[in-house]
Image (tube, rainbow, N blue to C red):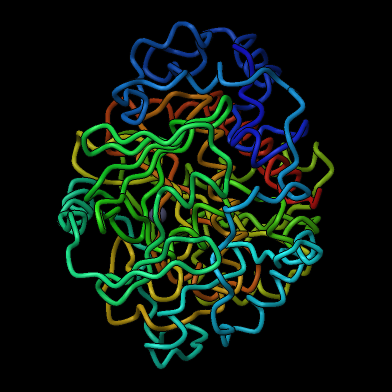
Length: 483
Ligand SMILES: [Zn+2]
């Protein structure tokens, strides 16, 4: 299969690509070469050729209606694409006007580069990415916390439970009472104390070819980039990769609208990672195998999460080193390390990013891949109380890098293995809150699901997963390089 290269297509990447990409063909070939010498009990399904994986469910997100082109077919590898950084959108598409400055200094620092490509434009262009939502910095007495005193929030949870919560949050639908304004070309609306931006503005700014509303579905289409949202839902598909928005898409004044927070904290950094700025300079990856010692993590069909996480970490370490990156690990054996210990360790490593490796637990039917970035300030988590929404944590200094890293990792794995796509999600997990470097928490399937567990327990599956993750991390670094 052809690698899906220009991830988010025109807007995101140039020839470098592979942003939302599958791993290189070489990784696949490598795994195919490994023959089925394992016993039946441990023979991994993933070791079979890609075309022969009937046991693996197709991603839920892979069947939108009407279906966009398959991701892999959207653009050939290395197709030269437009460079959005140097081509600001044509009038009248202008970005959201600059809001009051966030009191998060690092956020401002990390977005300095975002402004550079646009300063010469008339009228001045300020990109959405540099515009933290107004309601965060004005309506809340936002204070910066390093982290909550209680070590909580990292634990695994039932898939069904979380899906139910997400569904209930997404139940809000069409908005009514709104105030609207049209500032600097963006259609802005106020709804439930938040700013919203019309789909039409997004369509123009990012230069999609078409914007179509089909029932409750909102489609943005360009030759290499298809984005689908649904009114009343927090699910967003970008080239068939699922993201969970902070706020449901609503209809205001007859127009589909996205919260400004989602525009700034999710859509923009995912569509234009090269605008993020400071994140591409790392040379070290901190691998954090979840759990350890008396904390076994999830108890799976074939073993404990802590053991699989450690094995995956060592395999990934080798892959990253092979690619020229330095690797450090929060644990190298079956030792218990506190969450605060992991954070303290990570924060001492310069020029680094952080990847926490976990496997999930849930009901026997819960399956698939999910990747977490820290919830932005002012947004609700997939889990947890709204009461902490107002706070900014250390990790929020890296919001754009966090979501970009999560995207690179999640998309690569979902595309490569065709696992169920549970989405790129937000949560205030303890380790993510405390990090001062870009970081994500990756959940590589359910040890409690019969199909997932077979993969996870297989050495050659974990090797292939490690190769995919290793390539994804390089994709991330490449995608963030300014153009
Ligand atoms: Zn875990």
